[in-house]
Image (cartoon, rainbow, N blue to C red):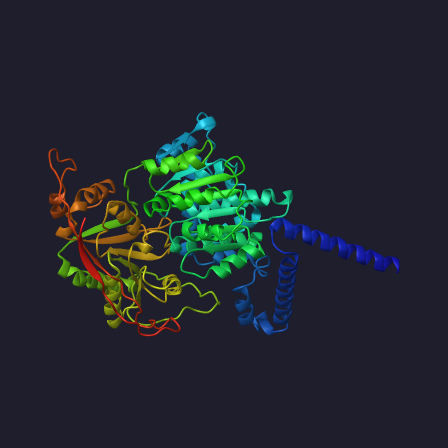
Amino acid sequence: MSASEADDKAKKAAKKAKLKEEAEKLGIPYEELKAQKKEKKKRKREAEKLETDNAEYEGGQGRESEKKRMRSYSKDFEKDEGRNEAKRRRTRSMDKAEESKQIVNEEKAQSPDEWRKAHSITIKGYGSNEKHSVPDPFIDFSDAPFNPTIQKTLKAAGFDRPTLIQSQAWPYAIKGTDLISIAKTGSGKTCGFLLPSFHQYIQNKGNGSVKGPILLVLAPTRELACQILEETQKFGRPLGMRSICCYGGSPKYAQIQAFERGLECVIATPGRLNDLIEMKKADLSYVKFVVLDEADRMLDMGFEPQIRSIMKNVPDSSKRQTLLFSATWPKEIQRLAFDFLKDPIQINVGEVNVLNANKDITQKIVMCIEDEKVDKLKAILTDLMNTVDKVEEKPAAASVRGGQPMDLGGKKHAKIIVFVAKKYVAHELANQLWDEGFAVDSLHGDREQWERTKVISAFKQGTLRMLIATDVAARGLDVKDVGAVVNYDMPVGVNGAEDYIHRIGRTGRAGAKGVAHTFFTPGDKKLATQLVEILEKASQEVPAELKAMARPRFHPGRGGFGGRGRGRGGYSGGRGGRGYMSGGGRGGRGRGGGRGRY
């Protein structure tokens, strides 16, 4: 081998080693980075060739159309044409970026204590952290010491700046401190716990190979678990982190296979994960981060025994970090938190144990009787259709396969979720509106899991513009562009007021504005007092008729009587799909019911 050949070989080896080091730093496979570099070089060569070809034409305009098309997906022209950047037409996104930058600069001008006071953020430490030094919040994404790949994904996701809970929770979470975060729904809690966990994992990746999942997230419902999985994959895949979502109603075999192949992140509902543990198919002995999301809802649903069983199978509190996120802070949650968290820090955004609605949501109460609800709903839909042409509609998201979402045609309006109390009402109302030309479907617990997944996906993509749902969609359904929510039926039960806040929280997410319409009948008067309190605290208009129904909660000397209960069975089957589902057929209908004393 000649000296020149040896020199070339050494250069190639050094170049390869440098590329491998860069790939490891970014957390992506070497071959993937190599392919990216190769593609970039190819595009640059094509751009240079177009420049050469243009020079051969009089005036250099011969291939301007090809060049314009390439510019839409390639950045290879930016260096040479920086002088034209100032001539770009201003867009709404440019204005929004400038506004966000101005807000960041204004907030950074405040002291940390002033910032926390302005946003009603309180911090409390327990145990050895009772008297601790409170870290400064991360006002901008650049303040957070996240991996460059995470920062790049944040920028690509279109987020302007951290939410309040993220700003204050991240400085604690990246240090490995156990954390209790109490914040309203839609406040960015998912990224609040995912990104610090990913950051610590990447920082300590060289300490040994992964032998089992290192992140465990428990969520109350399938819909919320799937939503968390989407965010986990969005930020985790570029880092080489594999994820699985375990929930009831789906085959166990695929979930067991994922554990056997190896993975880093497990998002699960307590019931299904407990089943896999009992089958000895889920090894959680290497978990370093445990997240209890919507902890109050998990306890409401009776999952406390399963949660305690699962926590016995993860390392003890001295070897793991535990993050608890909740919208409320009742005594049951406090007991759970102090059983599993070690010397935690508690961050409250807003008042604790007080039902506060998002002030970005305009709440409109419609006083009516039961028989007027359908007509009232159609009036709201008519208003939405009349305003759809006056606002700039965002293009629907592309489907997973890269194509455009299916357009079912029909009546155009902003996305809307209509909440009902009973499954059969969701079924019948969806059928009626479908027949009248609306792109609508129902979402409730009697539907098969694959159907529910299809419905949610179609709604997110814009194929469906309306959902008729029970409270199965009140938490965890994160669709950024929901323009309105309608409470066709008021929530029932002890937690009715809290469920109301979670329902209307499906709109006005991530700083956007929203509208919530609520049909209030004389039969809902038990919730009148709490609803009036919620409306007044959010500075919303309170109808005089509703105010008249409100009564003091304490009635000394009054006894109580039992009651009578009715129940209806759910519908099975369906209409065989609404034009965007494959398979299925017309199912049968059946109602079951009964009366009973309690």
